[in-house]
Amino acid sequence: MFNVKKAMVKINSELVYRYFILDQNMPVNEVNFYLDYKSFRSLNTGRQYAYYLCKYLNFLEKSNKNYLKATDKDFKRFLDYILWGNSNQTNVSSINGAISYNTLKEYVVVVTGFYRFLNDERSDEFLDKRHKTKMHRRIDRYQKIYCFNYGNYIDSRLRILKKKRVKIRWLDDELVETILTGFNTLRDKAIFLITVLCGARIGEVLSLHYDDFVECRRQNLRFIKPHESKGLSEGEARDLLLPENLCRIIDSYILSERAIAEQESGAYFTKELFITLRKGNNQGNKLTYNSYRKAFKQAVKRSGLDSSLFATHDGRRTKVMSLLKYQSEHGDLTDEMIRQIMGWTNPATINSYKNMKDMSYMKSILMKVSSFEK
Image (cartoon, rainbow, N blue to C red):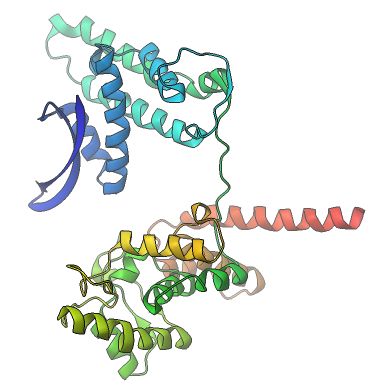
């Protein structure tokens, strides 16, 4: 039986977390090499890949099949299994509450990517001529797994999966105000507004330091620098411009909610600006991403909206769209300026947002034309 474990390992003299797959408490090296490769940029990606692969490996084990000897037919049987369990149905028209089409595609990406990885690794192992033919056969088998068109296969087996939910990509002013009514704390309201008004990532917001903010207020400044920024070292992080009304909300949070949490916990020296308020072992410590995400989802739900349609990253997207709107109306904001404001390392990132903006604009024009034709 395969299972997933999280452990700390040393990579380049640095301790980092990684997800591993174990078989009877023994590491499966080739699988874990792949997970380590996928965890390089994001540990969450490694976690998702680990659980998807673990399910696939356990399926093969129940069929007395080793993953190194699996074929495209075995993977198709696995897709059938996660579509409708142990049933052998092949003409199902719909399954209420079934796995979504997107999730099914993710399984395909993970497993086929694993065999592509194996193919690349094994293609250099022809050192012993006695095993050359056998190895070629194995590599050919891997290629059949990752080269097959699974999209057509899935469509032919199941015509209707759970409908894809159309998620909100960015927020208009009305949505922002609606969501704000759902927050129970000034802390969470301030974090949400920093993502919307500054375009900050959640990790950047949670890395802000208390002393830096206090010093900004003392000197009557409005810029503050995060201590963590994706793809950038601390010294390269961009400055965030905090509007005065947002600063006043943070002031109120410091004088009320933070002060009470510090007094109750005795944790007066936490360097981060945003701390855990709830009583318990973590009160007074740095607020975690998962804690804020939970608070954000609850706020969306309390405001009367469907929380499954919203993500914490929506605030950052909202800032990008407001910058693009300004750019279309004025000539003094370049793509490079937007890249620096948003802290992107890749200049091409802006193109996906421009495509979303163009599509939104086109839809609004079509609506106007339709109204005129009536």
